[in-house]
Length: 285
Image 1 (cartoon, helix red, strand yellow):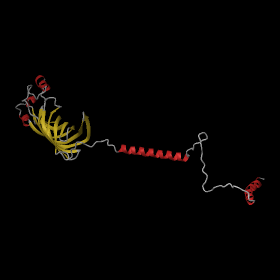
Image 2 (tube, one colour):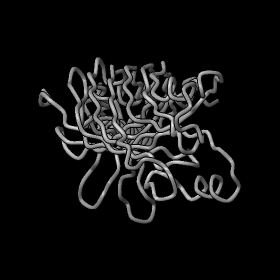
Image 3 (cartoon, helix red, strand yellow):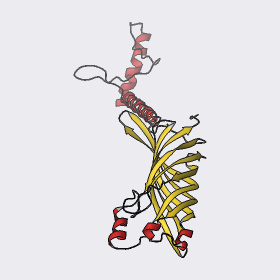
Image 4 (cartoon, helix red, strand yellow):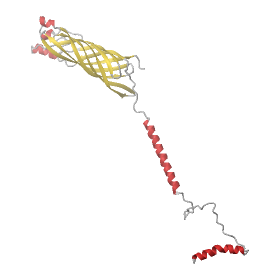
């Protein structure tokens, strides 16, 4: 029944046209497809396409990621470690030194001397040191070299302490400076390094015959003045105030064997504490 009705409706315009009656046909254009436009029921405005919104959101996310990536790259190129401002490579270091023997309970020994270094690299250097300790008295309680313990043992206890005065020394060794750093002092940055020294040399000693109670004893006089092969080991710190000037403080142990009264061998160890001002040349390149 439905199909018959539709057929009649479609054929009716053709019949009317053949009878000469005025007829305005309904024309359906197929040139462009229909576009579905969704409108807000209340405002009547067109809604945004969901696909366009998703694309815009993705584009924004990508733009944000790119910006974050650029910020990370900028952070990576920021330099947090400053270059070294004080270099020792292929430079000479010379300077005067002053020190004292810290572990001698019987004598005061004050040493003046000098150091000479050639820095092969920033870490290793070849070092030569010399020192001289003057004899200030001839022995006895009035001797400036004697400490109170020596006078007490000799005068009150009648004990003869084995006293020998270090008078001179020289050594050649290797300096190893593995630690380097900087310190802020006020508005200035001061460079420093910490080093160790290893070497060998000679030490001259003079026995105190008054303390030994051996004045005029031939055996004691024969070994009164001696030169000993010596090993040295120590360490210290260097503070650089400029490319040409530095200050050093150092502790070193000097070990040797001496002969007492031509008959007794005795190992001695002198712990020397010293400081010196260093001058560097040539200038930094």
